[in-house]
Amino acid sequence: RLVAAVQATRDVLKLRDGARGVAADLEVDDLEAACARVADFRSLEAAAEAGGPALASELEDMRAATARVEGVVRSRFHEAATARDDAAITRWLPLLRDLGLADAAAADALLEHLRARLRAAVFEGSDVAAEPPLEALRRVVNA
Image (cartoon, rainbow, N blue to C red; front, side, top):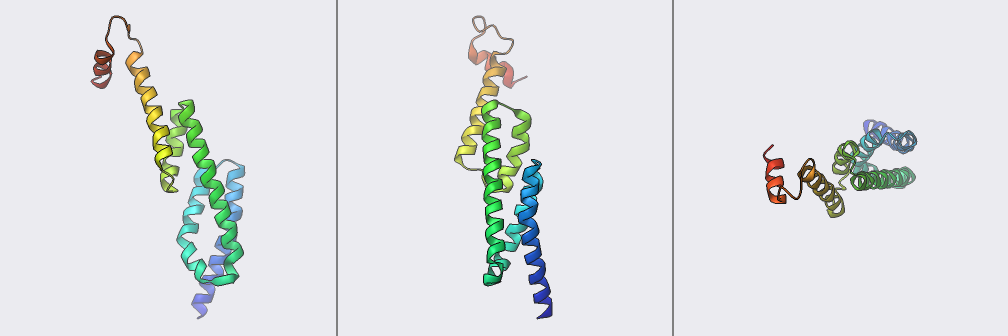
């Protein structure tokens, strides 16, 4: 019983620190660290729920923090895709996956970004009148 009580105390402290840590990470725009804290929370969540009312407020705080991180990551990814920002997409895409947010909207945003990149590559340095688009596409794909 002592071991269970010590573990429960550690879980409570981790939850409290996790919610505060996520808030601090978001303040400095360190979404990678915030996502790591969310992953830790998700691994503790089932055990914490078994702790009953004693952990209810900590669970609520961490769930709110998780929702905030998910919203920021989703928003930043869509902004990056719209802006055609490759570096930002490279940063946010793994976080979308880690948080389980890789949904149809994210896929559509990524595909539209890739279509724009392909379109630019096909017509970059190409005389559209002299080179048919299909030939330009072949040139880009086979480069």
